[in-house]
Length: 528
Image (cartoon, rainbow, N blue to C red; front, side, top):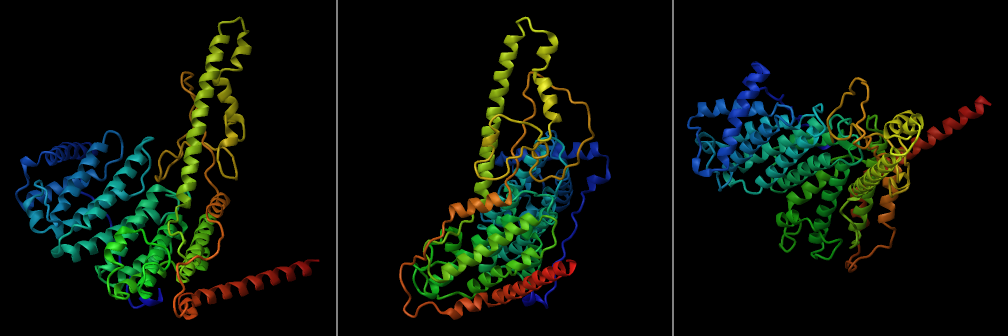
């Protein structure tokens, strides 16, 4: 943060409520339902054009569309929210050459001005919410991904006249929505979350693109991003996406420095390669070196990750582990290793293993239930005392499950996870919503429908040790491999220039650790 000392932090504005929020919920919802549906249907029929002719009409319409974003992601209101998102994303085409016919005239005349207001309104979609049903979280996740994907695609087609203003508003919007979702570590409480990964990935991709094209307005943006990123290190996807940007940028710089595309691993990021062609004669463009340097220092030293104030120490430990690996791989790239992996897909792979295990276990659970139910129906036709037959019914078995400490002894439990670790079985009732904050409902009598299987109990989420095991298993230690030796060798000064202050930080941490150990031993001897 020292490099931005003279610059202020950006201040995020509060999300503004629509004028319809002043009326009753039924009135506001009804107006939004009717009007948004008609406008969204008109987008699918370009021949109708736009029904909004004046700026006053547009102001009124936008107030109604904005209100739709505040509705809950229930099955009743979902289509209205989807329609509102569809309208606004379509209207952003006014920033491109291919303007959609449904765009109002006033918006076509000043698309940059209205783009800021559209982004501010869609921030409502990126607010943590309580689940209203089992699918509300999934609906919200889908719409968040739709917005992020559409905006990232839009950024590649903005015409030159609006690029400066549009890019500054886009990266500010991405900072704001990431802050809304990531500032509270309880929103995403797993090592890997697809939604968190999508948020961070879009932010970093657009940020690097804006920086390389010099569309970031001032260092105040970098200072704000750095300040936020150092709070978000508890989210493992941040470290992974950061590594996916830092390493390719470093590889491109070295390839240009040595004037050969064979130095280090091949870069597969097509977007980066379009922005920085390797076959150009320019050695290392200024914007490339500055972007890499600022991105590399985004998170600070790995030791600062462990010093972050967070209740989730396991996530911080994994983030520290991954950040150290990024530095190790960076050194390998500097020395020309051609087989360095820059993917950082391990947490996603572990998450996929867990999902596959859940699906397999759920299938076994369902088959076992129906098999048992079939046997019970056959036995019920025989002369069995009522008291004995009741002991084996699914209802009785379910009641016995509830009394066990582990929650359930499911079929196939030994295969709950394919990687070593804890195989404790836990209930998944609060996992249907991938990021909403849940309040536990009041306890109520459980009524079991014997025509349906009892609630499935998912395997425990992957632990820190399981992730590290998977990483070490898929990334075996090996000798450095490079295509050729540079004429003057690799200068040690290059490595020291990059990592010297990291080494100093590590030495300081080591001395503090040794002092702590000696002090502990001294106290132990005095106690004796």
